[in-house]
Length: 609
Ligand SMILES: O[C@H]1[C@H](O)[C@@H](O)[C@H](O)[C@@H](O)[C@H]1O
Image (cartoon, rainbow, N blue to C red; front, side):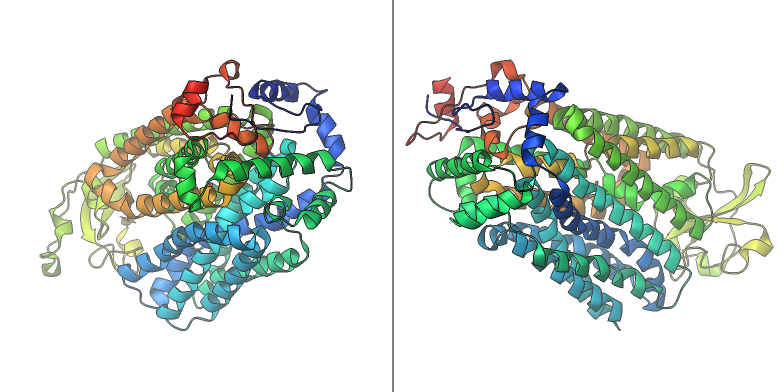
């Protein structure tokens, strides 16, 4: 049999099969496992944690820069008099730039290494932060947002790869997951900074956007002193430095076996890798192609299950459940970000205990169910939507579409309109649908709910939501969603992608999957309002729930368990037809690499089986 993976391993065996891998996985669960032996071998993980911390600052910046903009926009649109086109541009240019630069990051990683790419990303982050904080017009601000986007893209694909490559296998999952913890931590800190500086209506946005320079500079300084990934050094033929770095990050213990294992696997990969551009080689080499499908699929389903609409619209969801004050909604949105962060911490704790596969499965199923709860909440709210009962006789309103709506639900789904109503006990009375004041969405453009007249008139203004008694279900759905999504589907796509590719395909594989993540992110966030207008809120969330269920089927069929395996052992997991990856280890293919042998196509594998 031709396709092999040779490993000199702590067990001493030279040729390792997935049966051994499986056995090794099981050993991990017992207290006296190889796990412990390896930990002892790897010495103090202190240096590894330092590396992971400085790398994960890239994740923090990713979270901070994507999260801070919503709060900054509230102040900016007033101060710079931004049209909705400019608002959309300023929000989405960062994500768009991240999509492009994450794809380019694959090339840069292969060429310059992980360390230089992280240095480059932190330099770009710092430059972007400075540009934004001193911007005197919207064009300069746009340049700043574009610049940070370029940094985010490079960091998002490089950091997980770097952490995975320097970590010992028993800590790898946890350490890469810490990067996602930092992403959600960055989102939380951003929401707190937004809250604090929202009290500073003039120039508050400069602090919000500019503060990211601090962690970016810290990361840049840290990485001036931190080493390159030993795997990349070895791949480039710098054997001396590779051994030195490996021994340094393993706390000075003997690294001969690990070094030999990486070296021999790189030698063999040279045979596997073939000729031509890397992406072409990935697509034509079955195990790498399958890994790419799994990696991109996971990233796609992460975004299609709607995390960023839930995060972005959490303030609205919370307003629906009765929070009427804008400032209060900003603080509650940071409670949402905190919940996301807290449950990602659960993921860090679980990943090496239950493994990536079970964690992803449980998480995506829970996500689908909680999206149904969220949708049901919106559905009940829509059915109980109060009717329009009051028709003001203001001539300036005659051309407005808002006055044509007969229920709050349809009024609220038009971003130009809001619902103005009075209360009799808990009942909604004298309600009308009015155009919103474009400069300040907290009031109507005219009538009883316009600026300054609301309180004296004893009326309430609901923009983006309807007063309803079912909103607690929506709130419950939101909390359940975060509890289900954050430990698994939030971090696992990043973690799994950092480990499943062979070294020659790792940069390109991660670049593609990170690109898919960002592209789907843009697609979902840009289409959400339109989808909600066509399908209503509950339709949109039922749709996301259906997509999450599809994702569940995908994970069941395609995601193998990578826990406890060395990076060099991953290729064996993708030796079989794709949709049987999860079919249990007892049917694993034996991989025995014979020098000069090659494994090229699905047919080869089947024949050999
Ligand atoms: O893994 C992260 C995390 O879940 C974030 O909360 C989300 O905003 C990102 O889009 C995602 O990639």
